[in-house]
Image 1 (spheres, rainbow over the protein chains, first blue to last red):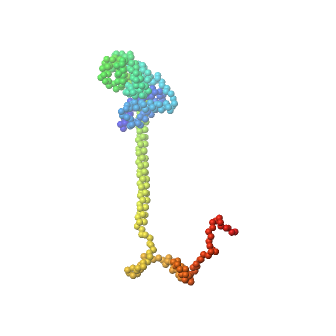
Image 2 (cartoon, rainbow over the protein chains, first blue to last red):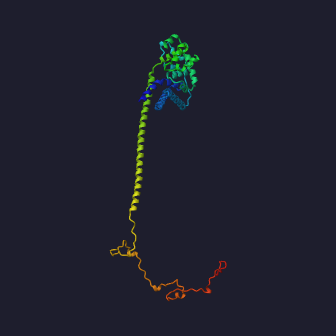
Image 3 (cartoon, chains in turn green, brown):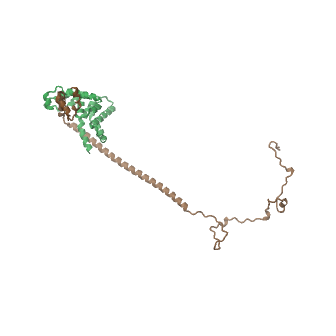
Length: 167
Length: 203
């Protein structure tokens, strides 16, 4: 029963990130819910065997990635990634009110879809660099360099008063 | 960002925002890292809660997962019952087999004991020559009369008596009733030993 509750909490935490991750991999919008469900089901079935020392989120995302690879084999289709719609949808998950003077949308628009996924996995899902590297098929050094670039982009044009307000 | 800033990239991008003393000291003296940290804080603060459609999707996943868990537990229970049933069958079969083997062994053992205890078959016994103490002969087994051969009666005169030990030729003819003849080998009847090649074949 505790496992069920814990699993429910994990689904709520990871649902949005997993969806963007699958889209970043190139999964069509119409398939995202089905593949995400399949990945969660696989994770739930193996939840008892999950090694507690490892990050559950990393494990779940790797299951989702393998499920996506299986799907592409079944469908025999190529990755069709729509960057424009991805960025738009990603920005939709953030508030952009008059209070922050469109700053959030401005910040996010500076990032590529890959960088948005990296921020999602690192900052919102707290995955270690090594596991992000494994999921995105990048080296750890490459992940680190991309993070540096992301931070550079985010700080550019930052105004002192906003910094004092938000820090 | 400088090489010093690079050292803090992993910690700075961490979502838990629990910065170490070292990073806090660095942030105090590095405006670039301060701005990057503030941007990330802004993103975190403005993240929308899950929308209705997302919550519905999550509910659907939870429902599916729970249904699958129920099916799995039912299947596991059924498997356990089947296993118990199979085990019981094996136990019953093994018991039956042991019972059959035991009964065969016991039967053969009883037969052997019965054979060992059985009295030996009656033997023909010769009537004792000596009378018993009571004076009457008590044979243990009496042969039927028909199984006894009738006494052979013969004429002693018809049977020649040959005394092979006798060395005197005259004694052989002492008894006129004998039919023994003395064969004297004459020269005419002499047996010639010839080889098969020398043998004359008369038609």
